[in-house]
Length: 453
Image 1 (cartoon, rainbow, N blue to C red):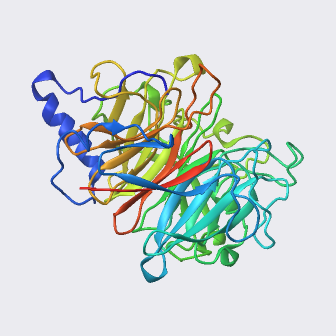
Image 2: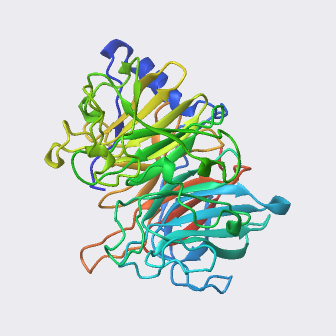
């Protein structure tokens, strides 16, 4: 992340900008409890004497796991590149964390190949599962799935499993892989052998980023983070067995891509609050991308709607929200922006640009490029940033104030050229008392406690 500044924009006229700003932002917190939030967040970040994680006064962290350490299961070492993550209720008041590892072939520590949990012996990615007791102590740490590739983000299901996404389109015979990649896999945090390593092929083969499941209909929404123009699409999957529980997504269904009539590129939309009615969903011609990547396929006379860096995705209230981390004309996008959050209302088939991030106005709000996001049980929105320079977890309150919650202090650069690993996988314990977050490199999982409001 570059050292620029973040702002949330609401361009509906100077006289009502404050009201419109608050109204647009409030959509992000649909379904979250209304709480009294003090202004200014939690105060300034204090340097960590241990050089790991800077936090506000009154907060503390515990390192749950570090790449290269021994897994408590004895299966091998903690894998590299900790990324997307979710927290589930465990037995006796404990918590289970399912953590992705975005490993490519050159990764230092691969996910160990545990029999019964391996998709492709050439893949170094996958998931690990941490079991914490009621006091937050790690009781076990084991492999959840292995032999996958570039497991970036994903999303929890209403029935208590994790959908892990491969952010790649690599095929068998390339980079040491024995099988095609670019799939979603289901991981049961309580018993990974129950789900095994079966790709959910009907959800499509593309550079998956994140997913969100509509808890009312079972429809699965998916983001695509393609790295070259034309950029990714926003998808929905209509399952044959909606809300059927663990394993039901293997029964298949229909994959569709979003078409916003007259809008080939979401980056060209600039004004927060812009609404598009009558969003269309077009069947994907070849979900397996056997000859052509999906985003290059022919979607008919109306074309299809693309967007650069489609990343975070979550369900809130009656809508699905998704993030475009940034867009640049130099990369081929129709316009440049520093991050967008979109809201899609399935019942009204309505798409709204809810939040725009930008560098131009408020010096108090640093950065751009929002990535993983989550709703905090205490009422705020937590945003992981992903870019160059200092790396933070930011909070956003209902008034639109952005404040730093944590700053990475692990310098992995060269002397005189510091580099800090991005944050990823921010999530909260079911009771809201603990925030869990990963540092991507060096792979580290933190538990942060303190006076969350």
